[in-house]
Image 1 (cartoon, rainbow, N blue to C red):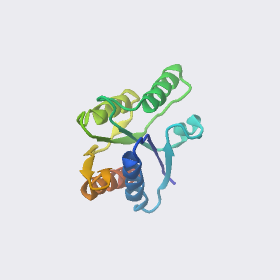
Image 2: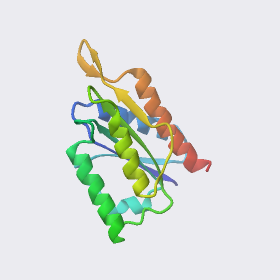
Image 3: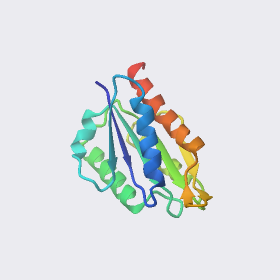
Length: 160
């Protein structure tokens, strides 16, 4: 069964909501296994060689991914360069949230994914946090875009 891993970081909970929406979209396609991991939680990094797709998400911090996500990506790139991670024939996707700095985080994530020779499947989702009565939140429209991303990656695995 094809496997998708969604790896994200979240500071306010918005990017976590997005990650869960991506997972919902991916699991809507039968025959795909989906795992969700927050950066910093324990999972074997070597397992990335056994997956078929990776989807990355991060909030924007001064125009870049969070420090934890940057450290994770640096480790992945270093392991690939050293030959310890192969990451052959993988596809992927990216998503991110932002408040004031613009949606540049998705550009950074997409560039890293391409550096790893992983093909980015659209849509790339960059969602602005909206100020609501309860504070910052992600709109349902943007959560639907996240579901579309998960579904698009899963469909690509089932119907290449």
